[in-house]
Length: 252
Image 1 (tube, rainbow, N blue to C red):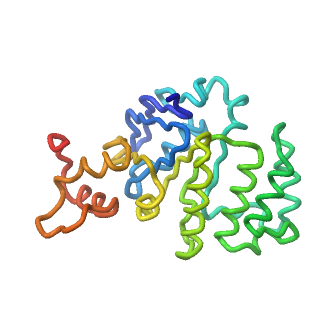
Image 2: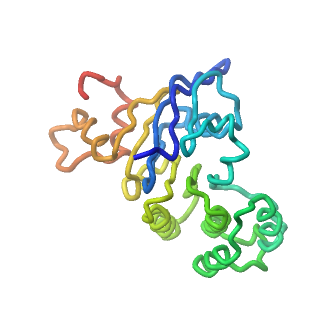
């Protein structure tokens, strides 16, 4: 199956940190979780693959084309949703939408209105009046209304209450269920990925420790289980035990 996004050997060096040889790919109809402790390189990876920061080396293919060389053409096919964002806080949603829609030739007003109804969003409200969960829903409505095929979510559930998080995770699964769209989901809340991810890419110290289908990923860390463990390790337990002890590549 062709990848919607293929990242190969992406590298970026800073005075105090280096992103080295990042490679992974996402196929249609999948949710990929990007995990790693703070400072592992998750945000840097997203910035480099989106060309928000110029990588020193590497290639990013989006929909089979070089993203850096065809950014203007390809950008409408993807959308970025950041948790904790607070742009235009004093503007009403209707005013924000009227600006955003001008950037997309394939804007679908009927689709947008259907998501407003589905997410119970009121356009006469100001952005700052929305809860954090409703802010993320609004950004998703914008993303899906210009027919984005790849959604890149950076900490979208951060700061949300359990009910709002559960609702959003359900929405994420519905988005990819058509087999046409995919989600790259960076988060430190690994329990969210236990529930909704199909694939996991684990960054450690600026490198990919492992990128694999979730069940394969979990099985690859079975050597970290303790005799007293009665159930398979969660992603959080894998991270805790991996970060506390050196990674044993011979265990794969």
